[in-house]
Image (tube, rainbow, N blue to C red; front, side, top):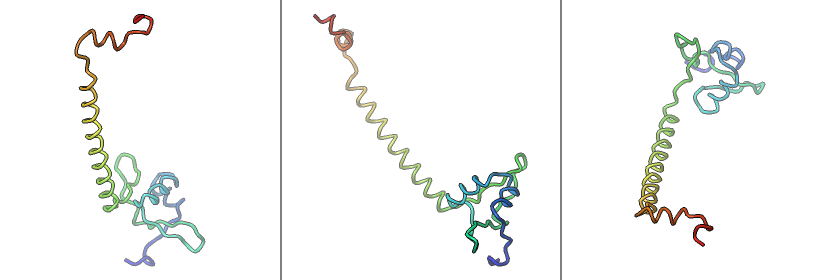
Length: 117
C-alpha cells in the first residue's frame, strides 16, 4: 500500500479515534513508536492503519512496536543492570572493610568528643 492509498488523520482526529490525548500521540511519535508525516501546512498526520486495534477493556489504542527501538532499550537495560551489579559488589566490599571487630571498636568509633576527654 502506498502513502497515497492510505487514509491520513490529523492528530486531533487520531487522538479521538485512539481515545487518548494529542500529547500522548506526540510522545509516541517522538519515541519512534508511531508513524507520521508532515503535511504541506506543517501539521503532523498519522496513518489510520497505524492506530492499533483497541484493547477490549480500555478501548485505548496500543502504540506500534518499533523493533530497533526495543532492542536499543534492551541493551541500555542490560548496561544498567551490569553497572548496578558492579556497584553492589563495591558496596559489599566497603561494608566488609568497615565492619567493627569488637564492641570497643564500635564505642570508639561513635564516642562523642566530650567522652574522650
